[in-house]
Length: 433
Image: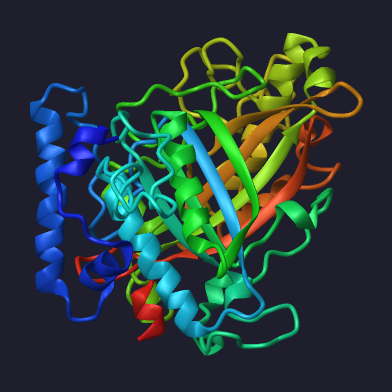
């Protein structure tokens, strides 16, 4: 992030003034001026040799950053509930302020007047813990939950109920789910990813501070060790079970697949979602202690891949083709009929596949001394009804994926992530116009 010295140099626009410049309707020209300020400061950072070169991910674009962006190392995810008294105008103002703040933080800049250069008699606009840190490839992705359109009582609080996409249908109850309401749902979500955990935390902390009085954090989750590769240049990481995770993930480099499976296309639903994507989040706790007591051969049978190379059972290399018809000398399938790989495979699910961006988590131990750890599953798709729901129906329940003996779904969320932002707009603006 910017140094205190750098923070003092740019214009001392108040947060409200910046709101008017960037977010205001018809303020494109003024936005260009502000964007120029952002670009100049980022360039200054590069030239100074402070290590920020290549650390900035473009905020504006056809799609929100943080979906197709190569997965960063760290995550801070938060779901927000809007205040019961919040009105449509307050929601729009919040989204505008979040857009302004996100534009600056992803450029490696402080929010508003900064952490140390504003009015000393008032709380700073920026919380300050990222002073001196690079942008760390920070991306901020914002989504709208089902409850934003119609609340639990069926009320259309913000006048947008008739614009809810059919794809944003409530997820069904899956066999074996042990969902906790306090870590599920949310009117809004923010996914902040960065290569520096403090930068990701700084982003959510500032957005939560900005939201005070309009929205509050319902739950949040820190993540580390991305559990999937989203480009062909990334190594496949390992999850908390020690297995490579995401070998067969969709790759952002494959535009045809992204358009087919991830990005909402013209005619899919309401125009305001064209170019967007639907996010499913699941907090999946891994029952680490039983897993650690399981023999290696059984672990590999459960997953359907070898633990070392990550190869499909019966093959030797990670990216060898999964052969679900292969049989051993005894005539039995080499890849178990209830293995995770078989039941999650596209050929088992009418071709359904997802773009996964999950992260491992460890939140200490529970009251029985067991490690509270697992996977914070995040997956983007064009239509959850035919993608995530289809796959999860194959996996869920004790009679299906044998991995369910070692995992438990305890949190869940579904969000519509609108398309990318252009200068002069706020995130999701087309939904309200």
